[in-house]
Picture 1 (cartoon, rainbow, N blue to C red):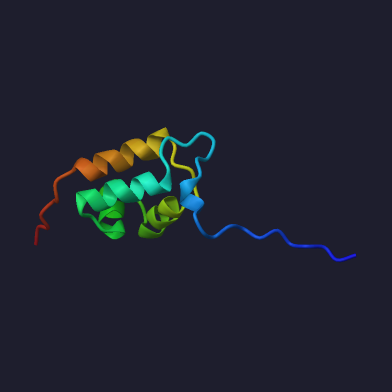
Picture 2 (picture 1 turned 45 degrees about the vertical axis):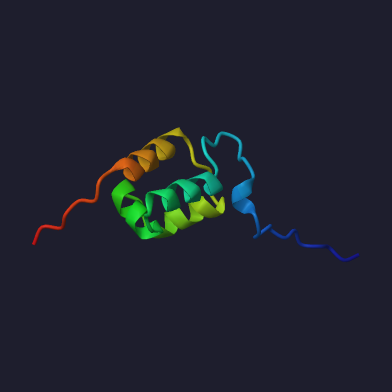
Length: 84
């Protein structure tokens, strides 16, 4: 008898609400684009790795209260000038 491997859904992963999540990846992407930030800029401001922000937006990880708070603060921050 053949066994079938379960396939992970690659499309629309950020649309579903994960248990314990405060916001979805889709909501995070919408807030980031409204703020005019790239994923890398948001990651730098929130002290996250850019790949982690990408994974959050894709729905790979849940966005809990602590992460949502850090990301919202980062979205509200003004751009910090780089000192030479």
